Length: 359
Ligand code: PMP
Image (cartoon, rainbow, N blue to C red):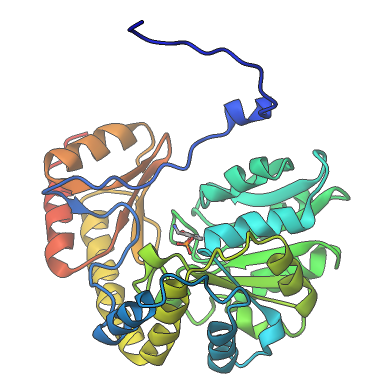
């Protein structure tokens, strides 16, 4: 027999997965500049590369399940007890673990701003809970009062993203305190600070300043951006010991590899160099935004390593136009395009493309 064999069988796969949106990664196109995933253009530092190579020699053994060394190093670096830290396979995994740790019934709700990080609706749906979005305001910022009003008896978790992916805007400390003051103490508030290291606005919230006073606050950070370890998949949560314990319980075992653990420890040892490396992007984001504003684009002030172009219906043509100019950006239909701020050369290539857009 030849040709196609069609096998039909009954499965117990959840039918609701048919409607689960896929996580769309930024495209990597040979010969094109990738400004689609908020990565850092530089490789890991030499010390970090050496630590990864050394860790690879024990690649035949399972990782340390409890992530002991990295957790201790984070505790020291962040000035909190190790029992308050949970390390995960990227902070996106910790987002999923937060839903799993808080929601069990379909009517239980997860509240977040929209547009925000595209993983929030996906992990909520995977967790079988209900998505409750609150529109960002006219300035592309979280509307924390509307978010507080959206919290009800069924709310189990609130995601707050600051700086917000993809708009780059921050939540202020005063705003987060208002939200924390308005929601019931048993509702967990997850402050996703994936881009924390790029924040320079003194009014922006720093979750670490608030976790002691608010046991229902958990802060998410990642090694994927400023620490240049996106490929290694390592992020962490800091909150109350109860929340950290629950996050560890719902984690799939050994999800943080030996290489990831060693790389993250070495990155913390090399933190000064890595944080100094953010300065260029912080300078460049002002230049990039100013150039875009001068050309008539709508671009909110950004505190992250990317800019948001609110292009509306022109989103798809703009992204296609950039691709023609060998620059890969990230379209979010039908709202706009997010573009990573990178080296001056790569930013210039993007700006040249943007200036040539006639949409
Ligand atoms: N949160 C936000 C807001 C992000 O933008 C990202 C990365 N795109 C993540 C979390 C996830 O990062 P990672 O899983 O690589 O730690």
